[in-house]
Image (cartoon, rainbow, N blue to C red; front, side, top):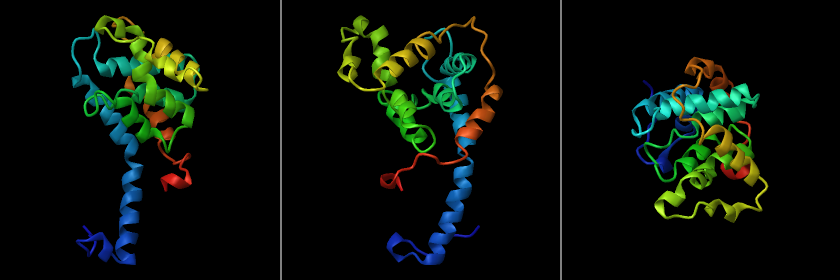
Length: 188
């Protein structure tokens, strides 16, 4: 395997960085595989629910697909909780950062804030404010996030729901994450 010549990035040559650009491009093409694996890993996370987080994610995506949501939205419903294992308190931010170059800003915002908005359904049981989401009431995507949580998150813990297998979503993940569409100058 070819490697760069440097041990300090400042000493890299044009050839070194051309090699890294090729390697990175190849690596980015395998992102859909890593995302699908991350969904699979949800089988092992957060016990206590009637369904695994894996089944929850599939159920969420199934509902979105059956409701005719577009590919970016369906991908978001499938992936919205893949950060649970590494960022249990900020998983939405983590997943939104992964999705940012591939899905429109509205969908990223929904994913980023869905954890806060989801608290509407349970925060009172912990003595917390279930309406903490209202600090974003004037945001243009507030209602979209409320809808996401109502239709594709809080209600997706039903073991009897007719959930589609992950293979139904693989083509969507591959389409959505095959091309960077939303990189701004500040992200390059």
